[in-house]
Figure 1 (cartoon, helix red, strand yellow):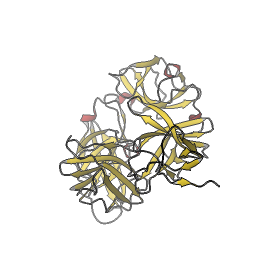
Figure 2 (spheres, one colour):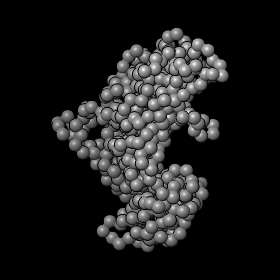
Figure 3 (tube, rainbow, N blue to C red):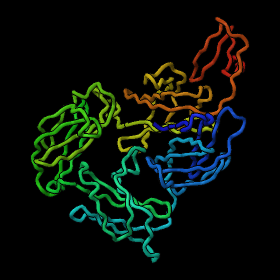
Figure 4 (cartoon, rainbow, N blue to C red):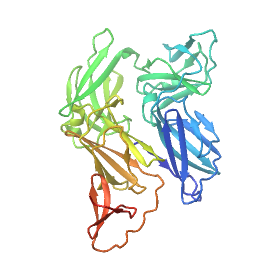
Amino acid sequence: MNVVISAAAETDCPEYCLNATVTNQLLHFSLSGHQASEPYVDSVRIFAAGETENPEIATHAQGDQYIDISKLDRGYYSLRVNVGGCEYSRIIFKRQEAVAREWDICSFETEVIKPHSLRFSIAVNDAQGKPLVDSLWIVGLMYNNQSPSQRVYMKTSAQSGDTIDIQPLFGNAETDYQIVAWINGMDYYSNSFYYCGACEKYNNVHAAFTVINPHHVVMNITNGSMPVPPMDSLWVTTYFNHSASETLLSGVFQNGDTIDLEPLVGRKAAQYTVWMQFGDCIKKGSFEFSGLEYDYCLAADIHGIHIETSYQEDKIQYYLLDYDYRETYLPVDSIWIQTYDMETNTSGAVVYSSRAQPGEDISVSALKNEMYNLFVKIGDCELSQIFYKSWKTQAIQDVPVQDEKTIKILNDGHLYILREDKRYTLLGQSIISR
């Protein structure tokens, strides 16, 4: 999930691999290829996840320079480097929070006003006055913590105290939203607000779903201080479009019921949408399900793996994430790396194995530049994450003689070549036995 490298749009563009290293509040990038030296870079732009306009950072930095990214919040961004008419891009992840912002905003409040309007206000802690808002976005509640595909619902221009027409949201399945105010290139997030579209009668009805072992989900519906209304029907589809998605299971359920996910067992791990009908109103929720009859990773509260790469030092690091996408630490029994075929979505031969723990450096200098799958095993829980190696590597020297007596062996996580009782590294260096 964490390394995305896109080729240049034009077919006659040189084949460069865009590499990026994020350390603290600095970004270092490089373009590697068959050429002896790196090309001259015309522009470097860093965009918010999923965006194509209004870059967060724009600079003419070259590959031997560092870019200050201290103003960026923790999360995913799109790095785009232009060389002539060619563009090279990849997704980067910043782990540290942004440094102090220019405006000391003590509150950023929103208030829904009927019909289909929203008023927002910004208050600061000093006498600077009101900040000038360059643009205003309305996004999903967790936009700043999610993947680059999270939706921006609408964009507009307004200042503190203005009333915004949010009728463009009408017809969307109701949800929680946030306002993002862009001020001098920095993004400030409001408190969340709820817009229910045509479902005003059930404005306070919310549903949460908790997946439990074995393959069930518990439904918890709230309605503020009022009793929970009876539900007419419920159905589950793939995420996220109700009109275009296949119904995977359905029935009549009420608050507190446990829904059997047996029809989903055997499917790939995915996010699913729950549609609930109350009279003429349809409300929705979602949950993630691994497709397993019993999920040992769910029992251990481990949701996924985040992989970070280092171009200069030819290494990777991995981190464990819980179900709130926060880093969590558990002792890992073993890890291994297998080759990965994108066309068939299958893993191949094991090329590395060790007991490296989260955050430790893992040398991948012996691996070719291609796609791999990192596996992590913790007790009965097994997770995997695909990554792409794209570092510069030293040319591998020929082993003195290659014949039927030459074999490759994997020992303690390192790949060696064995011939006539002599051991060599992949670079052809002889290893003296002790």
